[in-house]
Length: 397
Image (cartoon, rainbow, N blue to C red; front, side, top):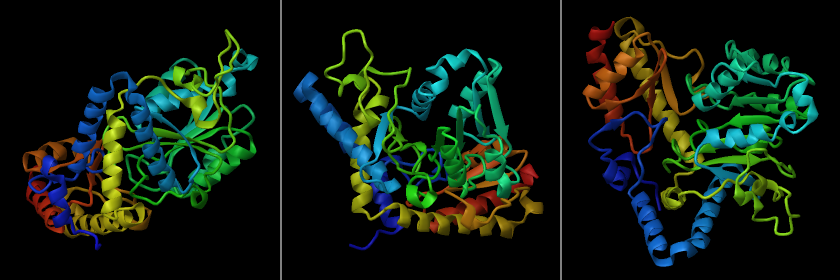
């Protein structure tokens, strides 16, 4: 079976009306294929048929979701804890730090090393901890070519964790050297957590290639996996045994012989399990992942599609010219760019509003106008978006 063109794929996304709307918001929320509806209906039907006995089927869907993420990371037997959001999983990770489980917690402030380009779920939480006198070392991303060494220089025997991204959510720049940080942290026995949300399924993310075998990795299905909300995960390093302070009762499933009054933990992913959840998200994701497999849309193919689309946008903005549109292209190269094109402008939010009024959906973060593509976006739609940008430019420059 040959792969469908973007025009042909659009028929499989009819509920999201992708042929009539130019959804350049794919880095934030990609359209769901129509197959997702069948997953949602199957969840309802299983609940109606089995009532409280539905959980066997639901947990099987959860395992399908785990297997998809394992495949993306090239780790067939990887330990994968699931959660509704990366924030929920980050809290479980942080609560497992030795700092919170040993007497030394009272002798010094918690120390975490991070960057100034993290997604809000991490940035906000660390900023709040900083207000409580925790030591949060925020390393500027720029200049990016020295970032890895500058982060490593902040690591010492007082560091409790290092938490950073594989792709920066504001600029779309790939942090190719994140594995160097993870290895340095591992050598110092410092837990390293890598946010891979903006890499998964648009930038190949084999753990061995990225040198991240020793790292915790969080990500999810809301963006390039097209699976919608509630499909986040945390990969736990092989042979790691955790005992997080923030712990759900599902973590007791594998501890049938725990002593009365003792909080026991299963091994690997089981130690980081949550609690009762809405399984609809996993049914939906499993149906979407089956669809992507049927359409031969793996991460390698999706990378090629995305790079061609981003190149078309990049060259189109370049042709219009910074003087005419006021949009500044990234400093990094196309090869170092992940799933969206980030354009610098002090009027980013105004651009988003005007483009939406003209049927082109985008988003912004601060002074970054972000244009994200997807496999169902046609070249014609990209060209229409570029023409729209050119026509609106006089109102914003």
